[in-house]
Length: 483
Length: 93
Image (cartoon, rainbow over all chains, first blue to last red; front, top):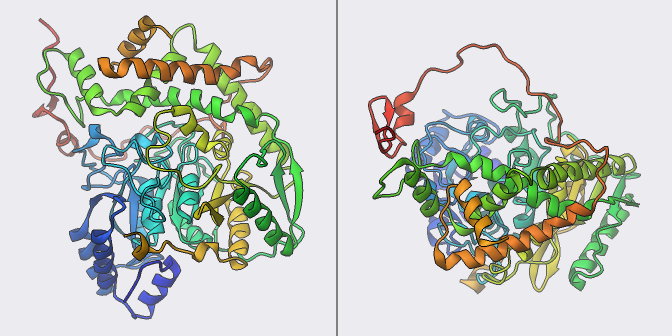
């Protein structure tokens, strides 16, 4: 049976009615992965996946996601399965434990077939900083899939897998979801456990997921999110069933359009898609209200102080002593640190560690890090004010569609501006998602929906109603044409 | 961003930049710092820094052992170890 492009819910049904076995599903998945040219995976786990599939077929595994193959971003620690974080420094790292998100998805019965490619330590918006090679966008092999969760997004977009996890520090789920034409969600900061996620910027990092539609994302979030005492920032509030309100009527609800997001200078197709999407919501009885986020222009500079500062601190643990890459021909301990780190990290990671070290160094701390934390509060306050008037906020997910591989690698700032629309949700810590809503230059673009704290249900409800009234999420790349 | 600053922060971060990359990285850092300098122009008087979006205080827990020692499993990942120890070059003469 051809399983490519089937949704999670469709596969679940096929398993329930025994039209397909989990073994067939898993074998077919590995066949598709073997023939793929997008470089979406770094490590595969075929043998153990088949053992699990067999156990499911024998009735030994139960659960909401039982028997379904999924993929994990290579930033989540997976017990006894290599976890590289896209870096040379972790080329041989085999975690002795599972991340909580992985544990949760395993407990629901899903089968992790492998680890997806990503920008090194999640630092990038194009997947070009991976030590394991660039991922190609399934819609056009000359273009990037976005990043940092580029492998997960490409794998779902190409129909290799119906769902894959991602992490989002500044847009790393939403921007690749947009560029690959699929649905992706980042819940509220603290809603999913960060235990076992290799840390980049701890006050911004959050786990989430990619799938073919909002309904599947809701089902996955029900398992990805959990309160975890092993993560001190984990939220203990009762967790909703994200599927419960997904069919709610949108009549009379309000969407905020950000006054300061000037989309008039974006590509005409991006603007037109945005207007068309507004019409879809209007037809469902939604009202549009202009909201002001006066400090939003500070998002990117604020992020590029906070994130590198936290990264320089987090990545100091990689020293060639306890795990990871160790350089050869070493004379003393200091040389061991310097050589292992210099040979183990790529250029973008080094750049960010150096910025972080600079802004945290004596004499500069107040001018940069403290200042950025203050502007972060101003941005958060703007969101809190805006959400008094509206249910959700809507914007494009990224400035345009996927760009050519190599076209933005020379200028880091140009690359950083890819996350113009996504970064503020991480700074404020609010949930946000991207859904496909049109094309620009023949390639998919995304619509971003942002919600107030712990209102994942609301954005999923809006996204699901949109998808019931549009077909952008059903479109898939023509693989024959491009291969 | 002069050469000396780059050398100082590289050393603080325990990173060595290849001669072929130094110039480009210096220029990149200069551009990035100029870019984030926009923050210097904003009025942040009376604004308390925000370190974590939730502003929650880390919860306390009972000081009890919750998992057993898995020393062997963790030592397996080390580049060089001997029985209970990570091996590094000699630090005391």
